[in-house]
Image (cartoon, rainbow, N blue to C red; front, side, top):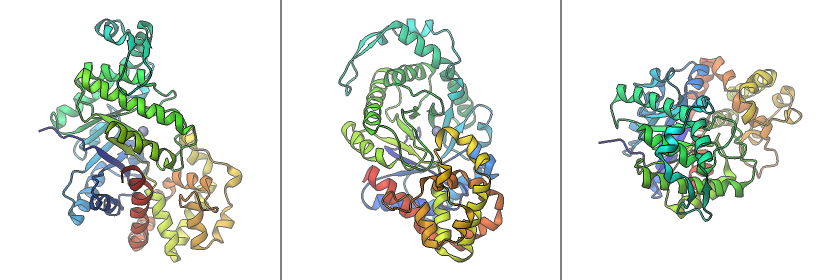
Length: 413
Ligand SMILES: [Zn+2]
């Protein structure tokens, strides 16, 4: 039997593989309230490289948490943003693959065969659930297919490599196109899905790039109404593609949220209800920030470590931020000096970092800097990891509370 992805799945990053149990506890709390939110532990190759970890550690942490809490529902380990070359290391440990083909978008190919095969895409296209009709010209189909076909072909090549290693139906396939410059419109999404169906990829989630900025670890900063329309139209386009092109019935949107897009949670929730649709929401591991919050809250050595990490992140801000330029907006003037932070109490550190928009001490610039600063903690090795064990209770409480109250409850309950 094929592995089918449940309706609501939540991608939880866990940079240092210490919080799986605390994360799973949030899913247990949702289950107790009657809603199954299935955890997917995602970690990209990039992240493994920075931390110096291996995919097997994610599997081990997940299995252990599941065992400890007696979780009887499904759970997954996601090889996040892999490509043909990086997938090998993930073949044993993972059962969910996010095939990243963003680099192949725009490598223009001849799309005439695709256009000839799909005359039904041209003309006035009415998609149930979208009020307006799309007037799609042959040129548009040609242009869109030419732009995305190479990416879809590459996704097929990667999919078949995984299939050869793991066996058909033994894993979940996601295709991601979010790490690219221009967002995909619902009409483009439909054409991409048709190409994916032609390629024979049993895709269960697709991650488009949405309009607007998805900065790491902070809220969505663009037009929520526009996002809502786009999200709703994408869901309609997916349902249409499933019905007409034989894609898996479980196919749903994957929102690579970059974490904490609180202002679009309500529109997501209402739209899902409207279509009775599922969703996969992937977060970018703000759980590591909850580790810092727990350390700071616990005081003593923990607070010292949290301050040290800030000071080093502050000193290396430029190099830490560089790879994330398109997904962070830090105002350098809003960053307190390390001297100032060194004088802070636990409470001051926690209020500046914790994502509570109602709190006037909350500092999004500091939060984003620390978010990309996990490299600093990774370099500290055991002196950081030992503290995670020592402050397990404070950290765990924050990890669970954050995931449940700020994410799972507003999205799914
Ligand atoms: Zn992504």
